[in-house]
Amino acid sequence: MAKIHVTTTINGSATEYLCDPNQTLLDVLRDNLGLTGSKEGCGSGDCGACSVTINGRLVCSCLVLAPEAEGQKINTIEGMAQGEKLHPLQKKFVEMAALQCGICTPGFLIASKALLEKNPSPTETEVRYWLAGNLCRCTGYDKIISAVMEVAAEMRGAPNA
Image (cartoon, rainbow, N blue to C red; front, side, top):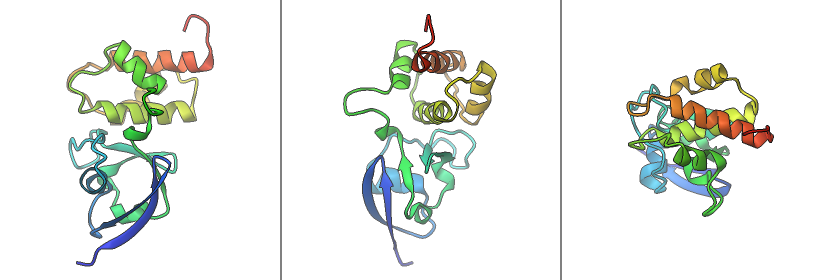
């Protein structure tokens, strides 16, 4: 099977890779490019652990074929922090212990960031709905939801945030 050459942008950097036509974006990110933050939880798009954004749209990278990334702008968990400076969501997840084993955490963070970029003032119901595609077996979700709500308030400059 002939390899396909793909030119894309990942976390703001021009990136090129060779892949098989049936290789997933998740596999290329992890195995070819060393971006191991996105996790494979289910391989069928049910858990959200492999979430990334493509041109600002939240997707499960296990469901995207790597050749489809041609010319696209991809953001992964590795691009969320600014060097050593954590994104406010990352800080709040740590501060509020909104993580445990860490398998689902990258997906929740990417999904939460995508939500706040689209809707900086979500209700709790909207946060829960938006994150419904991300599964966690450890936390019980309440700390995750609270962390997202607090960051949303802080980013808006809401009083008592």
